[in-house]
Length: 178
Ligand SMILES: CC(C)(COP(=O)(O)OP(=O)(O)OC[C@H]1O[C@@H](n2cnc3c(N)ncnc32)[C@H](O)[C@@H]1OP(=O)(O)O)[C@@H](O)C(=O)NCCC(=O)NCCS
Image 1: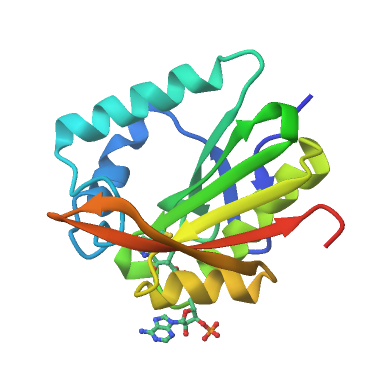
Image 2: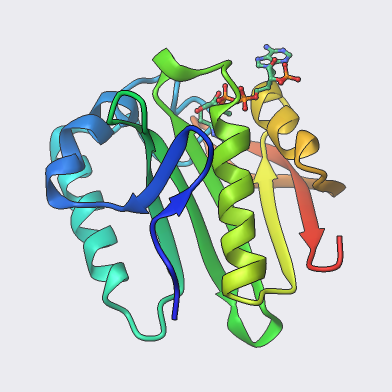
């Protein structure tokens, strides 16, 4: 039994709802936000499809995808998303991803949200290993992973195709016992 939403000091991490698409579109259509992502910038239609996809994933049994809306409690405003996907259930392994509306960068919100989703992975889903990949130029994101004690395990050469060329990624991970 998974307990959602997740609460942190300033944030609520909850399942997406249909009406969230507009707030998601706000950041998902921003080229600065999607600069290091394999998706985007997204259109309104892409965003509505994304939300439908997330609503369907909420119903899966067993559930392997936890894409959560990050809501700033004080303003009751959706400021981003944070996701954990169980990629190899037999190995108790999952990867995480996150992005925030640019208006809310630089205030520690991503670190707070990612910490909560790592907690979901280890404490509720009993995972053994959680990993993330990140573009070596994405300094803010590298800093988030390092602040949370994730270990850089290596550099994946030409790991993804983006904007007409192959790009490297750093691989970060954290284990249950860490
Ligand atoms: C990555 C992202 C989620 C970070 O969100 P955030 O709420 O600003 O992150 P935090 O405030 O928790 O931490 C950011 C850290 O990076 C640092 N940082 C940000 N920009 C920096 C820069 N250009 N150079 C050096 N450090 C930088 C901040 O100072 C902070 O570190 P500190 O707490 O030691 O001062 C946000 O920038 C974002 O949504 N980016 C676009 C989507 C994305 O790239 N997602 C990750 C894909 S792997």
